[in-house]
Image (cartoon, rainbow, N blue to C red; front, side, top):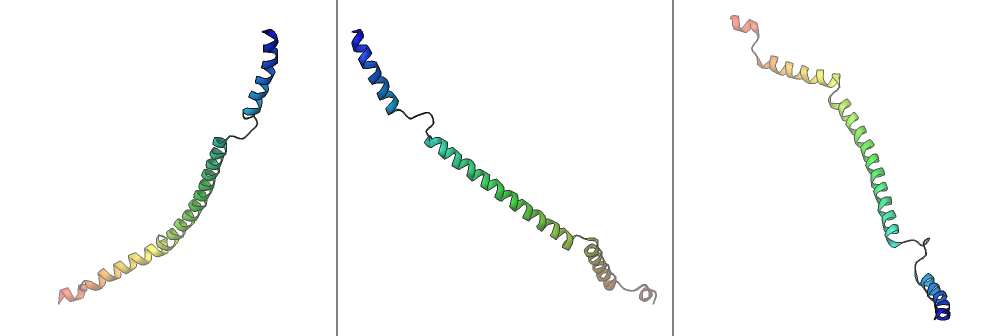
Amino acid sequence: MKTLRNRVFPVVLAVGLISTTPAWAVNREIVELQTQVQQLADQVTGSLKDAKRLAEAGRERLRTHFSWDVITAKWDAVYRTVSASRPSPSSKRS
């Protein structure tokens, strides 16, 4: 019996080692996870580029629509419109 075990054990061990995936082999789930991580990193990088583009567009909008030159020009236009539609003080006295 002991000699049978001595003969069979190395064969079973060899078959087990040959048929299993070695520890250094790449697992499919690891590859998929790495691909997902890379896609996420690409999306974050793209989002950062979009954020920079949106920030620049926001600064440009502030310059063109909300600078003091634009605000005073708009208020001046409102003032002129209102004052043109009101009768002059000299016409009230007559």
